[in-house]
Length: 347
Image 1 (cartoon, helix red, strand yellow):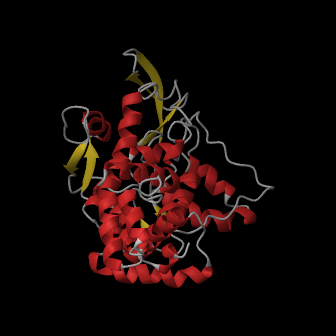
Image 2: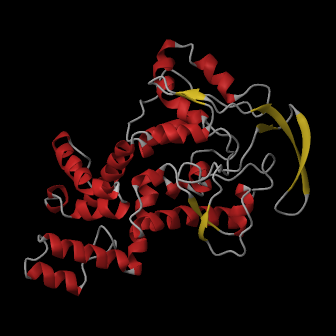
Image 3: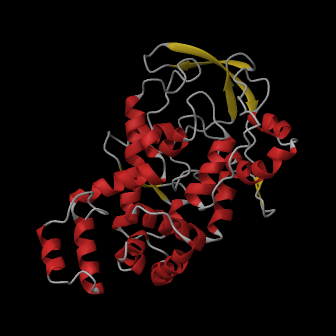
């Protein structure tokens, strides 16, 4: 109950506990299904995604009022983006969809504001619903959702370092190396004279920086076509350099900015595999579905038990994966197997 409802057990769970039935696999599965079917399971969805995807940071920054006046104070976009990610996970959970959907899916949860923001076919109204995506869409999966792209940006600029580290840790389950204390962070050039890639290339000439950035930056580069609110871009916005352009602010007033240098979203992963854009990166990540499922299982376990994964726990994680493999590591299957595992029952 604490795992799936964020609350103490109800009467039915207490009765099962009193009868010592909660270690039986059939009872555990039935009770887990019951808890997930209850509206109170929305508490789990919200809290788990806040932890796993950093969604609690969704309002930590606001789009820059000068560069992104079209996003500034657009509460409907922010609220819709947050709800999109929550409903997307709920859809994976409800239908036991494979863990590969973490990276790529053929659908998204959209309303009129999000569809317009993503440049997708029109959807009527503010209610979000499942919509099929065009085959060539860059959307689908968590990485290209506006909420995720917002929490991995600072409101003024995007950072391949932050987004690459987010993919490493939140999607692949690899801990990013810490920043050397002696090396200052890079401040992106919002004047538009150089791109963040050019700045990072120079930064990586430092031996102390290259090893870490070679691991983190490539996946982050694939997301550079997405601005601070997850909108698509082919060129960076700047305050001074480049082609003068006009936009319409949330207030309805015109505002001016510049289209600066073009975005280069290509990269090469540490293992030598290359990609031209986010579509190709997704396909590279999908080559190892078990890695995606392993990370999701680990994240669910950490959240459910409130404890880190230790070396001795790895075998239990692999057993969960093995039992969930017949569903292609379905999200619901991973939870059902987790609650029956010794890892969960003994903590």
